[in-house]
Image 1 (cartoon, rainbow, N blue to C red):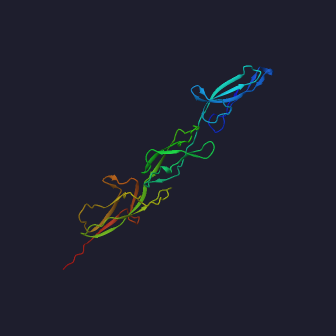
Image 2: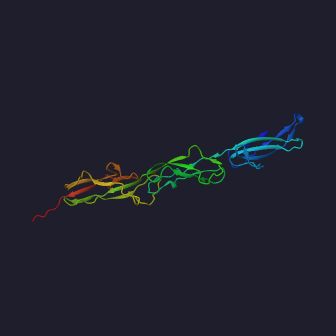
Length: 277
C-alpha cells in the first residue's frame, strides 16, 4: 500500500512517498518493510540515478519501493510514476500609481511581483505593448525575469496583462490682454502657462510645458483675417487645434483670462491720435 504526499504541487518541500505491506493472511500475516528510492525522468522512458532523497522541484519522477526482507528470496518491488507540478503564482501589480505625460518613457514605474512559497517577493519582467511615453492607454505583460524560475517551479496565471494610462499633462493658460492704436502693427499675442494637477499625481518639477516640446496651443484674435483692426475690443481666444488637427494630444489645456470669469483675453484697438496743424 502506497501513501502519497498531500500535494504534488511545488511548495518547496520534499514529496516523500511511503509503502507498507503484509505477507500472509490473518493472524499469521507479517509486516514487510520497504526502502524507497526516486529517479528523475530524463527522456522518453529514460530515468536518472536512483536516490533516497525525495524530490522537491518540478518534474516527472519514478518512485521505487523495495523489500530486502531475507524471508523473500527474490525480494519485493513496486514502481510508480508521478509528477511535481508548478505552483501558479498571483501577480501583484502596483496599480496605485498615476502616470502623467512628462516626455519620458515611463514603463519603469510599473512593477509586478509574485510571492514565492518561501522568501521575499520576486520581481517579474514587465513589457509594454508600445513605447510608454505619449498620453495613451497601454497594455503591459508580466513574465519571469531572465534567469528567474530556472527550475520551472512556478507558473504564471492565465491573465498576465494589466492596463495603465498615461494622462495628458494638464496646463492652465492665462491669456494676456493687449492694446494698440489703430493703424499700428498688432501686438504679439502672449500668455503664461501654469502646471495643473491630477489626483494622485506628484508634480515632476518640469514646469507646465516639458522642455523641448512646442506650445500645445495657439492664440488668435476672433474674427481677424488680416489688415487693420477697427477701433474696438476683440476676443483673444486659445485653441489646441490647428487646421483641424490637435496640436499635441499629450497636453490638456484650459484657457483663462486670469480672473476665472472668462476663457479668453481682450485685444483693444484705441483711436489713433492726430495732430492738427
